[in-house]
Image (tube, rainbow, N blue to C red; front, side, top):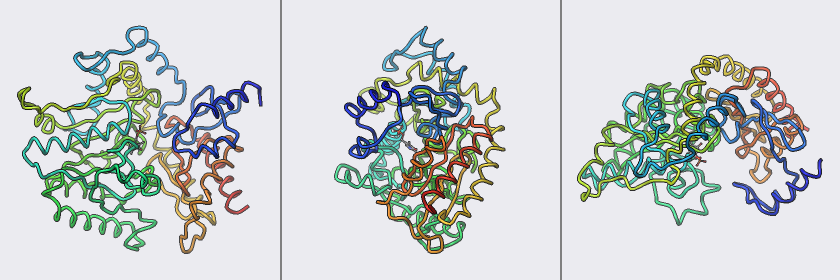
Length: 452
Ligand SMILES: *Cc1c(COP(=O)(O)O)cnc(C)c1O
């Protein structure tokens, strides 16, 4: 290790508080300091290369340091780095909004910008709430949420989340919601072994909750097709569509959180398109700039938007806004990213990769400590279990997932698990050869830790 790397590590320990990290462990460990990127690879200060198995926290689409995106960014920075949307319109944010409206489901006609997934969700929640108030449905104040849901880490986003372990401590600061069961078929709470039945029972329970509480529910929020941070929980086909129908029937606004799934991850541009579903509100972020810059959008219908129109003194404005909303650099890169989707025929070229991933997961499922290997498009989760027969989980304190990911580093991979679930979520640009390397490494690491 070079002196420069050692020095940077020391400074990191001294000054940086890392997210979702027990810093006492971090300080005791050797850390990788990333300096460069190239395609699906990250390169550290000593020149070691790591395949970016989690697309730099689920954001990267076209690869690191992609020439076309770099050029778009450089061109924009020579013209304008930032101007505000509070009181001014901006060229790049207008052009991007036009394209977002064109590629999202029909009916989502308005774009509200912010800069990360949590704020995109907060905006959606506030919008749905205020919409109901303006309509005179003043009792509609609650939200239906799902078990295992993850919508971000700010307080409103945590309130609508459903992951107990790391959010419980903040409970006194949160608003309460009505929590519906999610079809986590591998660990079905109804003890059903078949996903279709598990899904149906979840829908029945959701309908019961809606029927009971419809007069006080403003909206429902859901991750479409796959719950990401909750453990790459893949929902049975038709579940999202059933939820959409129930929301219509009970007059509940449907917020779809496409922060992780949007921009190709599930094999279609947006996950909800696979079930022909149009939400009332949609949250976008992670992949929107191809993984380059923080940007988010909350999209909604003309109907929701119109409910906020009125005289100034009626105080019907949407009282929300972030300083860097609609940042021109981020919007310019997002536009260039959408251009690359077309030029590279990205969605078309993704299909054989998804097929390959599916085959590798099938093999992976045969390992003696892999309970379930599931995926939705290019988002996969490999659930490690102590006992395959009984599906008994590894105690979370053992950090089996962390051990596997650490082992994977010696195979040139960077991975980050979700508890006992190994996440495979590579840049969409990854080649089949690189995917093969990735799966070889993951398999070897799982074997070394669970069988070794
Ligand atoms: C990551 C994520 C968020 C939060 O996004 P941030 O940019 O980290 O605030 C919200 N919803 C989903 C589904 C996510 O995966």
